[in-house]
Image (tube, rainbow, N blue to C red):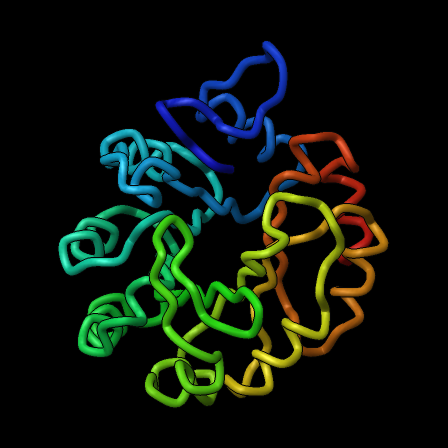
Length: 225
């Protein structure tokens, strides 16, 4: 669930868009882990730390907190929330010391985002390009050998429902040496089936496909069982 300007950003039309209401509806439909993104923080618009921390604290399921967590103060703040997982933004990979500090502070709560476009690691919301995926992984021991969960975001397809690039997720999984969380491109239940059957992917982030009605959360959960 993406949050921007205090609202659930992906909810279409005039329906209720308070983040807490949308999150609770997802839980009621069977969500057991919620991926919560502060879009304002991610795109340098300040963010809403109080709102995000309150959402995390108020939900009855574990939360994976994401969105612009890319600097030392961001890591300290996120670590102080009740989030079960904290996603370090791809931009943070420009600073190896910060990545190691986040790993030390967060332990097994840490997830590292690797945003990929055209074979390169990028930082969405900025013009920063960090280089080919293989080189970025080589520079960061924390990304290798299953030490830390890696969330691979297909920056060219995220939110577009144009199909999941299974080959991309598999390629990054082989570089990091463990199965990854896949994000971006899922538009149909067939996409979910393809990811379910891929041994290099053990989790999938769902957003636009759910909010835009391509399928329901119960249908997705049934496919992924």
